[in-house]
Image (cartoon, rainbow, N blue to C red):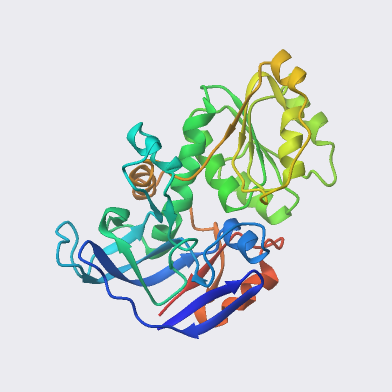
Length: 337
């Protein structure tokens, strides 16, 4: 089968690999669409970890082609999406209801072969059937939306709040739409790309700011003099993460949602955090939110049409690295025939 293998940071190749066989509690999925995440990019740049060599990609959907002998809840032909995070159910964190912090976490596309391939195997408990009204494209967006739902759960957004989102790529846009659904009155987008700002405004933002041309702090405080109630950092840029602390009001919440490169640090003044009673939270993975994401998509509570651009056939995968993060891209989607 055709697969995209990352042999080491900076070295991805389109190669033929053996078609996998599902074990007794696994299913074999004919992959249809697979999204390129920021985590994939920092893997490529050597700023995240993986078990190399690996078929990476962890946001994907497809159709079940074969089931293991003990699989009962799904059948051949079912259209499905995948939660890539496999937990042990036995460690301390799993047993206190924090499975996403599992000490033995295995993530498809990082620790075990994932979705940039014609076929992928996944444990049946990590596979979710798609409603009939959802496309494979929306199915591939279910995992990033599920992660976004987790971020919203942590943010304590109250009706009438002002929410600032730093970065309006696909993830920032999903967070923005969820913040609107949660009752935020003002949703401010900070994003240097004019195209992304335009899509954000179309999809529900109330203000947009170009941080390269405008003074972000001044512009935010024109909207709410004391700062935003909640600030989401969605760019994965450590300097942007630092700036969030200057943009939130006293008593507000900062959610570090984007994945910054491992090992990067920023200065924090504990006195200011204490004096202003700022809550800083990380948001990791998608604990118990995959079903919620699918239901939001099926209920048409999230707009997705303009969140995918461009689509690239798997044969041309290495074009991804030439355009990732460029001004006119949103979520790059790999298509597989």
